[in-house]
Image 1 (tube, rainbow, N blue to C red):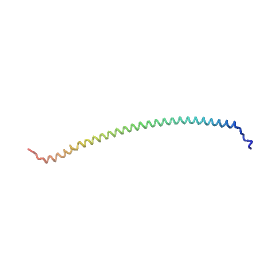
Image 2: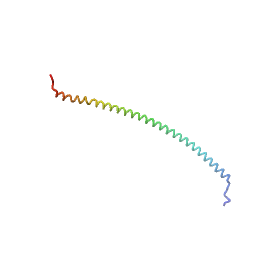
Image 3: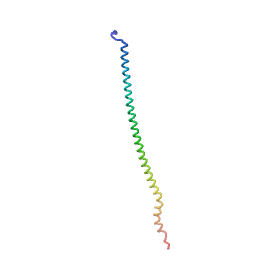
Image 4: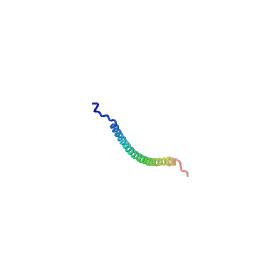
Length: 105
């Protein structure tokens, strides 16, 4: 039985080398294709990140303007109330105090 097994090292080595070389070329082509796909994905992610960043900046600016406007209006209202309280108190107290003062001839 051992005599039937062909032991031709030249043929086997050449065949294996040929298969290994083909596999290596296929891997290199696959790696190049994978690199191209990764580059496209990176570019798409970059574009998405830039779009999201500009949207966040625009939204933050809009919110900041609204916040400043609201704070300014509240501050003006508070200033009017604080400055107006003494005048309102004087007006309300002037009626009863004026009635207590006798009229002089």
